[in-house]
Structure formats: C-alpha cells, structure tokens
Length: 277
Image (cartoon, rainbow, N blue to C red; front, side, top):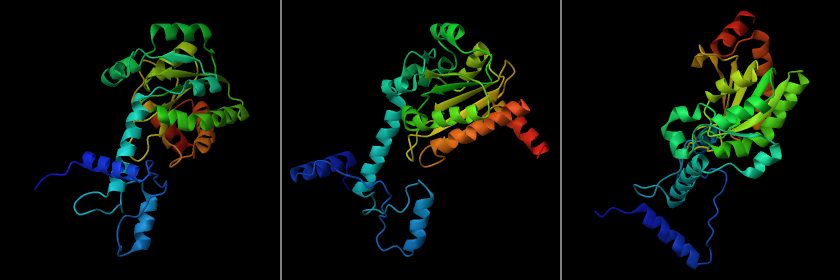
C-alpha cells in the first residue's frame, strides 16, 4: 500500500483552498471536538476542557484529520520559534531593562553547552559590578531561557505586579535586569555581584505542544558555593492557561516576603513553614 506523504497532502489542501479565494485558514481558539457521535458528549467535552492534551480530535481512517494535523504543525512551529527567535527590542525598551548577556554567543552554543548559559559574559559581569544596585533585599533577573514567547506574553503583566507587591511590603529591590540566553544558575553569580538577600529569576521554560508561553520563577536565599538545587523555590506554569501573570506577580511578592522572613528558600523554607504553621 502506497504511504501518503502528509506534508504533500496538506499542501494540496492549501492549494485547493487558495484556488477558491480562501488563502487564509482560520483556526478556532477553542478546542473543537472531532469525534463523530460520541457515546457521552458531555463527558468528552468536560475532559477536553480539563487538559491541554489532544484528546477528542477524532480521526480520518487511520490518520489525524487535516485540521488536527495543521494545528499540530502550528503548535510545533510556535514551539520552535519560541526557542530560536530573539526577544522583541520594543519590549525591553518599554520595560527599561538593562540588557546583559551570558557566555553563550549563539543559540546553538546555549543549547549544546549548558555551562555557557550559567555565567555572565565578562563584559556583562563588569557592567553589573559597576552599575547594579547593591545590598538590596531582592534582585530580579529576567531571561529568555528556552522561550522568548514566554517572556513576551507574561512579563508585561507579571513584572509590574511583582514590583508593586514588593513595594507594598517595603521590600527593597535592585533594578531588574534582562539576561540574554541565561540559565537558572546564572542567578547565583548575579546575587554574588550585587550582594542581595534573595534573587528571583523569571525565565522562559522549554516550550511544549500545549503552550510555548510558559514561564517559571526560581528563587533562592543568599546562594553560595554550597548551594544545591533543593535550595531553590520554584513556581512554574505561569501563562494564560495556568497561573495568570498578574496573579503570579502578587503571589511571588508574598512568597519573597516569606523567604526573607525565614531567611531560607527551597526545601528548608518548606520545613520552616511547616514547623511554624
């Protein structure tokens, strides 16, 4: 039996639609049930609402329906773009963020050499030493990480909410900085340079096919040479389909206040919170 090339099939569908003057294909934002005559449509609809997984998409023979396949390709392209594209200069300018760089000189190096994203470039380290706000309670680091799309979708709402929450609690904050191609551990170096009590990294997470816009926040109290991963407190899934950016900003401010209160983060913070009720 001759195997069908799905890419050719999709292109033929697009060509046919173009002939009919429908060159633009619109996809609904909400999930569409592709199962014909489901036994329990209410249960299927409920299940589809509760997960971003591709359930209830139906099939055409042994294959995905064309619409489902095209949506899959769109999501795959969005995930790839999230990793490879450069963050909008307009966003950085609008937030007035100083721009620093890790030692990764290209996305290929960033992906293949993990250590290159864990340290500031020599020039950026010197800039931070000379211009960073020193001895503050909190230092905020924003990084594109593995998803530029996550920063662009969440930071405009999250950062003001976080800054406002910290201000309301009289917590001093160093000027936030943006680091290109930074990984989580780069926050340890930043903290050592500016001598802050807590450093928080807002970093784009590895995109998936459910969303390419998920951001995580990593916090640690006074990292040093003996720091281990369990010392970090992590809040993940910040995006429009998870924890909303504005809500996340308010919650992170509250959490940072607790970290300062207990002078601990990660597992140690959880233990102290449990002991003190």
